[in-house]
Length: 518
Image 1 (cartoon, rainbow, N blue to C red):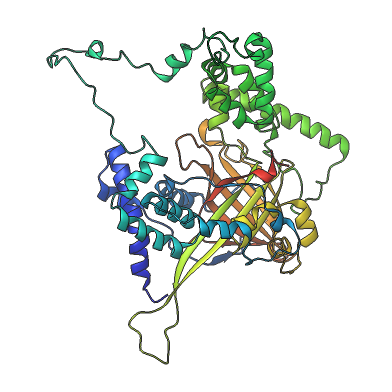
Image 2 (tube, rainbow, N blue to C red; image 1 turned 60 degrees about the vertical axis):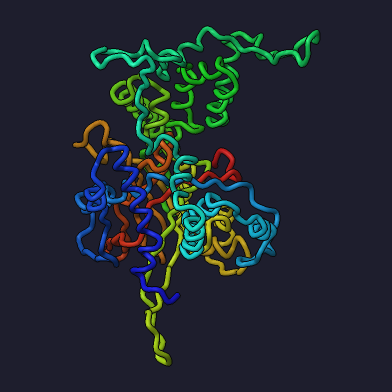
């Protein structure tokens, strides 16, 4: 490329900054100039060493970490989580190489965008995967076809986020002195969501109507079930997949009422170990290399029982103090790890290139550097960390313990050895009151600690991340923002901190090949 860094940033980042500023100004009534001044990021790079070892659960970054996190809060207002389907058969065989064009890629080339909105959606997808050059060209095509394509994109994917609230219409031209004009509405008063759900309580499940007059309607056995049996079936569905359980609310009003109000189902989901807080770990469960901790069987069993009781007691306190005794609100808002996917951080930055010595050029070349960080967490407290330049579609399906055991340290050009050769073993745990004894109840939880292997046997890496929400309003705790990243030398007992100049937050992506997770 022969364009300067300033021109590339102005091409790709300027309208995104204006877009966010305009949306935030409409929804929050904050001046655009103030929002642009608040968006600042970290400016340092490189590791800094210190001979003073860190104490347990105490880090020197806590004062500066909040500034880094707050500066990135508004950057991901319109982030959409990725979802990866089952891997293609050609990608699971040992003969597939990175860089080969498979059938899926050729199909993508054939399905060219047609409208301005198609080009814009394709540009957003390319930018999400780190292909800034391709996304810039697609953005240009989209805006040449339609100047307001960004508004069309917001209307389609984020309705209600930036539109102003509609004013109530007074069809009878009542005078201003009338205090309440709700009785003038042509369609009657609008029910709130809780009142709307309550209005479904007396409804029953109805079968399909007859196909034609004089013909008996098709049978509907589920409409004959008593509520006790129906709730038991819904509970089993929720345990298997919470997403499928929630989508049952789209079937009929009766199921919508049960999904929204049946608190015993949400209680079972929250306390269970499948996707709830019974499977969360607030203490280390194993070593960094996945070795068992040094405890005998009796002490481990007693320790697990005591920790389970502590976790249950903390859950009950949070339920009544923070979530108004609603199990559904706790499941949606309390930080937790998701095992049916992985967390991906896409990093892009621009560095200056070397000008040619043999010809005169007007512009200096630049390089767009793109790499990815992957983090997959398992139910038993283990983790896999990976830093690579390979795209997520080539990596996520191979982030398994079996592939790490077979290909770690290898260097073959074929999948999965090409991506798993540099993967690292690790472990994870969530923060608790022991990590933040002086914090308030709402701030005791919400951090994630990950320790992984280093580049050699004498090194160990430690990451501290915090849960945040990004994207649609219904998405919660799908973002992991950086709070600190260190390297520990076991021989010299020294810590070195990696400053976070170019690193970006992790975002959760669903991977269907993981099923419900390991």
